[in-house]
Image (cartoon, rainbow, N blue to C red; front, side, top):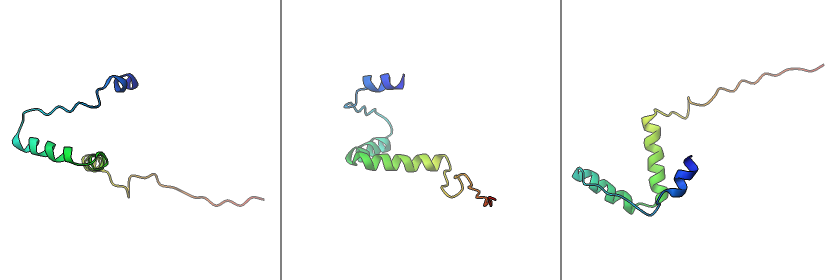
Length: 69
């Protein structure tokens, strides 16, 4: 279903709604940034919201040394 949605999605349309003046300024700012910069900022915000910690979120690896006869 998501693939069909992406095919139908209009990728060249940007809707800017009337809202808080700061929101409009933020939108104008982000439209001047490169797409990769926007994605990096989005990933940083996602990590902050989900309390992502790359030091503790990994699975612990346990190694066991065995001797074979």
